[in-house]
Length: 237
Image (cartoon, rainbow, N blue to C red; front, side):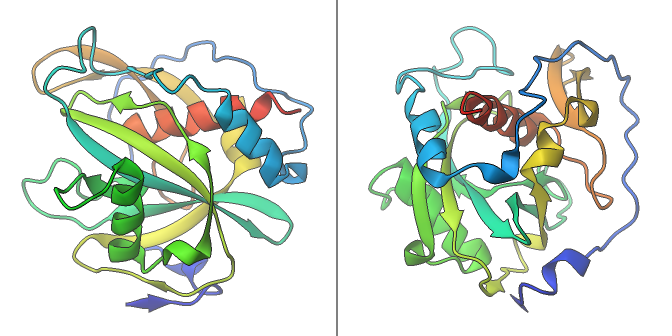
């Protein structure tokens, strides 16, 4: 399925998603309220990401000792410039019965395979398979600290600028929809909250949940990684 740039925003499928979670609003770290997110330059983004300690992890879900036995996964967080705005590109995964991640908003990505040179290669391969994004269409800017999820994955997000506009070829088996959200919207503290979520094992953890964007719900590990990215970029203002 090939999606032209002018069309991707209108590809809204499925019914409205309403959360039945018990929401508990917490005070969130204040981002730079006066920051002009659309004035960010790629060299500033690269410098902000370089400040992360390579050994640092962002274990928001897994608990102490989560590094033991976790499977490596790589995702691509593509930034694009459209109509004077910086935006992040997301996918909605196709729905499959029994797949706990199906139907969710995410970055393109997946498990590391034996043939992948490193976790960056994993993210690039998955982005090409799922969206048709070629490595030469990307300007790599850096990566986020590894995120250990309660579902058993150590997820590393590669941040890159995507040449835009470009055609996207969606792998229907994996991707139902692709859409972009402005960085300025994602940075607005009124658009997200921390909330308790009960896992299948009965354990209650705190997760980040955003308000709906075009009927889509960004939450969990992907939302947490977005918050890391926003907090890193907010230091450039």
